Image 1 (cartoon, rainbow over the protein chains, first blue to last red):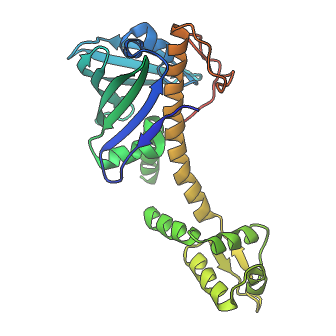
Image 2: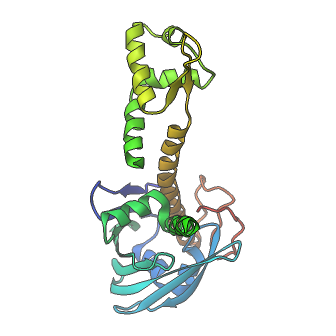
Length: 156
Length: 135
């Protein structure tokens, strides 16, 4: 089992995930900022990842696409605000299925005798956005909002 | 509306006697006397518990027979299960994303995957084998 922890205090805009990795932080930093590395691990087991853009510099854009087994594509994009190798990455994150719901993500990598302690903090625009993410994940949240739209349209 | 329902359901479930009553009713309807049997408490105390369960919509009581059998109503429990399911999904997705990073980091260092990794998990840049949907 991993040592992953998720902290989401009630009524706040934040989710903080911590986890350690048995790798030096230079390599962990590279895993987030190198297109070939991102392609290999980003996403879920059920999807493959296409790195459309990855400009690892402040003001640079990123856009990754997850494609599932049925060919459905889910795009994610944002802008890098701060990159300090090998200790810190700050970027915005937006799921294209839910445009307008932007979060600010800060990754901090701390060295622990050659291992890396990662803290991944996401700040959402509202408590409701944060809770929506916690309660269903970004993709299913979007699917649910489409269901609600269907229901609305069906009611005429 | 749904949040109120959840409050009532969780409040009703936050008692071992009431959970035991629900477990008994999962096996079929029962009278108050039958429900009271396994517990060392009075009939009025059992009736109080049944009222809480009834108010939360977790049980209904028949009107046809004089002994007014209690029945389990599954809907509020399904709402609880759906609510928990969302959190499980977020947790598992986060876990899976970072398991994949962990595998990448191991492969990049020429390390073996840890023993608790399932063989279906992929490492490195192979195309996905596992087509499970997590949404």
